Every structure is written in structure tokens, then in C-alpha cells.
Length: 453
Ligand code: ZN
Image 1 (cartoon, rainbow, N blue to C red):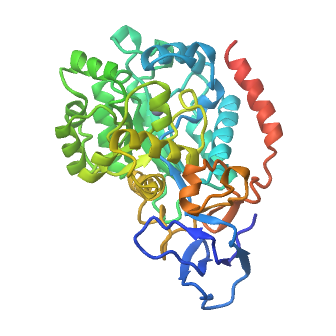
Image 2: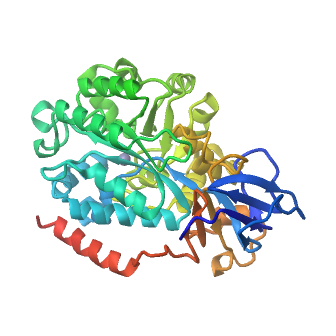
Image 3: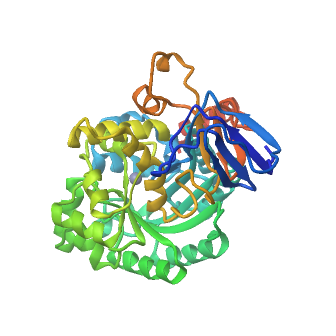
């Protein structure tokens, strides 16, 4: 779909702006990929437009933003040996299978994950890729190409694992790399792909995998390299109590103390999961401005615990949502993840937790986590025209009253229209130019091959 220079998304049924501002009942005017006018009811654009899109049957949201994923895991969804296990044994089953990733398999896995996200209303996705078996040196390059093919935005993290079984870590030696290789590749990728432009399609971040799979040295070296290049840092932290035990035994520290000891406690970092924090740690993370990617479905599937998302955000920590990797969700559906976040957080905080708060995590909260709140995450003048639009004409919505609440309460799972930077990337619930049937068939065949070598 070519970029339309100037488009009026006219008279939307409802708009969630993710701000305190009034909903633009007259619509949104987009020019050259940016939101340039928000119209009151009855208003019309200040100058002529090239296209008018009648949105009277569409609920319009800022494009959803996913802050934690492992795209490659779409090849190991619902795999029996890992279907009913908690985190550590789940990982030990999966590491040897993931070691069989090839460039072709990764490309299919990434394309599936991105397509699924896009169809669910997601316009920006973070990925945490930390498996680099022999022959897959270009894993992040492959991801960049897929992101560009689909016309989305992404924060791609160069992940790493350095602490193998022989040194007391969890992963087998076959999937760990040495620090020099990791740091050199990180620097190469930042130089080649990281953009700080307002309309950046690709940003890079550095992401040692987790306390139990990396050394302290790669944590501090990554922090130094990230500071040098002005990129963000990402890791898994405080996902399970097993991990907390590991940190105490190996480092003599709780997880947040460990994070601080390696130079990560600050606004440059965001953490996958962030479940097992005490009151003092929540205050410290909030004061530091360290972000948390709340992953409700994964946390329920692996019974890891319930993150204290409301308290973290109230303390000052950016909080966003992540679908997490597809071996622990196993869907990559952002609008459904917002529903899961609403319900899991209500279990902790009560039924008066507003629907808007969960939608806020999926949009502006996630933008803050990725450090992109100045450009994306809300419907405001001057922001990128990243929009997710849903219709309420399916059986599941029949009889619903509040259109925005209906998205989560009735279980919306597929966007009708998605725009990224002013370009339509989903039209009538489909991705133009992508043959989903063919993709599913090739991806499923690749997933079968992953199990045998
Ligand atoms: Zn994860």
C-alpha cells in the first residue's frame, strides 16, 4: 500500500487516545505519516485531503506496542514436553531444540510473529533474540528485513547467553557465546541499523538473557556499550522464585541488588516480567525509572506469579505489556494480551481497575518502556500516525454498549485496519501482499523439522 499523503479518518465510532485530552469525534487528519489535526465533532480538515476513510464503524486506538517477545519461539508452540512445566525445566527441554534454528527457519518464525502481532493491532514490537547457533550469525539482520517487509516498527535486541552448564548456568554449552563475539556483533548491529529519527522503523538494544544464563561481566560490558551508543538495555528479571534463589546463591544478592551492581538500575533498562519485587525494590525501580514489560499470559502459563504492575507504575516505573515468546503464551496477540493484563491485575488489585489502564499499558506505557513516548503510543498532534482500528460487528460484540470497554471485555482479537506511519498495513483484516496460507504451510513444516534436527 503506498503512503497516502493526506488522509482524514472521519467520524470514528470511538477513540482511545491514551491521553487526558478529549476524543477527536470529528476524526484524525494524517499528513506525511504524522497526526496533524484532531477534529471536534462536526469539524473538517483545514486543507483538502487525498483520501477520506469513513471510520464510523471503527474503534480507533493508538497502534499497540509489544515490549517483550522471542519471535523464534513461534516454531515451538504447544510442544508437549514443555506444555506443562515451570520455567527452569521448560527451558531445559527447549534449549536443545532452539539450537536447531537456521536462517530460513528464523525468517519464517519472525514473519509469523510479526504478522500475528500486526493483525492484532500491534504496530511496534520489541524482540529479544538470544539464540545464535552456528550459521545464524545474521539473526538480527534477518529480523530487520522481516520488520521492513511488513512495514512495522521494532526495537530489536541483540541478546546473549554466556553462562553455560559447565560454569554453573542453565543453558547447554552449545547455545552460549563468548563475550568478544557478542560485543563485536552488538556494535556492528547498532552502527548498521539503530535509528534515532522520529519515524525510526528499527531501533537496537542490548539484551543479556537472564541472571542464570549470563555472566556479570557481559551485563556490565553491555551497559557500558549501551551508554556509549545511547541504546537501551533489556533482560529478564524477577520472573520466578527459582531465579531469585539462583541470584542469592551465585551472587549473594537479590535480583534488584544484582541489577544495580552491574550498572543497570536506571531509565536505560527495561525488564521482562518483573514479578518478584518487594516494596523497597518497587520504590527503587520507580525512582530509577527502570521499565517493566508485564507479560500476563506467560506468567499464568508458567505459573510464575502476578507482577505488581499498578504499584510499579505508581512508583514511577514505565509499565508496558509483552506477549512474551510463543513457547510460553503461545499467541502473539496484543489486544488479547491487554485483556489478560486487565484480568490478571484485577485479581491483585480489584475489579475497579479501569479498562483504560490496561489499554494505557498496551500503548503509551509500552512506548515509555521503549523510550519512544515522544513519537508513538498515543493519538496526539505531532505523533506518528500509528493506529489500530477495530470493528464491533462480530457475534461476540453484539449487545455491547461502551465500544472501548467492549474491545477487552468481549475479547477483540483481530484489527480491521492498521496504519503505521500513515501507511495502511492491514486492510479489511488482511495484510496486503502476504499469503498467510503459504506462510502457515512453510512455517509449520519448519516447526516439524526443528524437532528432528
Ligand atoms: Zn521472555
